[in-house]
Amino acid sequence: MSGFRPGDQVFARPRDGRIETFAERIAIDEADLAHVPAGLSPAEAASLPLVALTAWQALVVRGNLQPGQKVLVHAGAGGVGSVTIQLAKHLGAEVATTASAKNADFVRDLGADVVVDYRTQDFEAELSGYDLVLDSVGGENVVKSLRILRPGGKVIGIAGPPDPAYARAKGLNPVLRLAIAALSGTVRRQAKKLAVTYEFLWMHASGEQLRQIAALVDDGTLRPVVGKSFPFDQTPQALDALGKGGLRGKVVITGP
Image 1 (tube, rainbow, N blue to C red):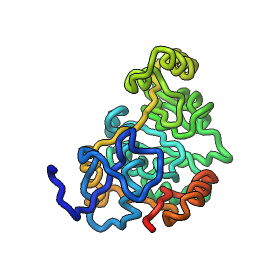
Image 2: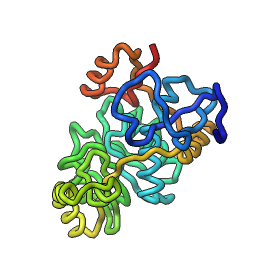
Image 3: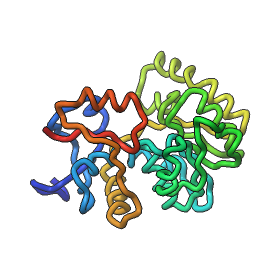
């Protein structure tokens, strides 16, 4: 092994092929691992890799977010949103988010400069001239997000629709590639008319990126947000709570 010893506290989002199930133990590639930031509880550590890697890859890798730029983070009180707001603020961006009124102070505390109540306000009517949007809602929300961008801006979607670049990266067969291209065709055509772009993000495992994220946790720049924890034998209840929504931050399943 390289950089890890038996007994080390580590965290990770396992790479594709080792996700989409629940298990008490799992073997993963050491390249996906990073040491847990000091002072985090197991639940806090478990809450970070999926959402923090998504935020990092959206803002840093795909979005190339720069100081002074304007970014909209949809669903700012959720698992991905709560970390993305913090990271965007650290990168020097002006941050807007959509959230319910009851979560307005919570997302402002995370670093949001502008909060749009998605239940009573239309973000398209409230916002304009944005450089980047991270969309975790999908559907019509993606199309509306395109229209608040400045020319050259970008919407990064994590709820779909998937795009041809995703199909190529996954090595899908030609038939599936055509089907996926059709799914995002309307969005991509509208983006082209507006002189903006749309990209679908499927987050990938990266121990290297997690180490950079861990450093930001260590220095207090990022903090995990655990909405609720469930013991392993209550996994169905955890999924039910996740499906109902309304929780701040991440839902975590802990050990028995």
